[in-house]
Length: 166
Image (cartoon, helix red, strand yellow):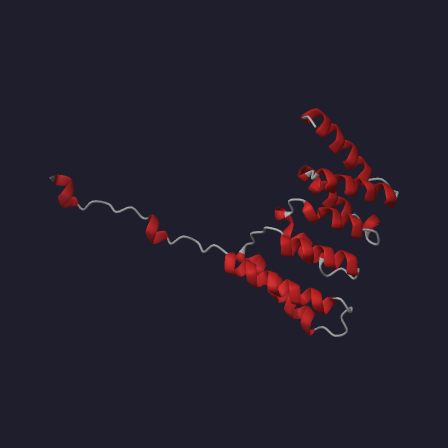
């Protein structure tokens, strides 16, 4: 597919994701997934976040599965707490299989949220599994965190006055 066709297709699919009919939105989402249109991820995210789709987003989240969602870790993390089993499990699957980098502060926030959720009473049946998976994902990300380079290693030495005079 050439760039013009891709742009036209992306525009049509983005429009379909805004349609009031859930079947049309789901079909568009699956088409995006089949074509691996990473440039459509923001449109899928918008559709998932739209209040109209609050009870009809399992397929939309599923469609993200093979796409590059690396910029949407926190969004997917939040979706993992959705009361819908399908939305929560698909979000966790994307987080588990995706490639993400996360800031240390965001990681700490996620760990705190998991701790609060584990202490809360009467979670939905699927939530125990979700929390365990999220804990494993965060541990993996914590191991992969890059530590800031030491400033000492970046400091240039300045010659002392005696060496300048010579």
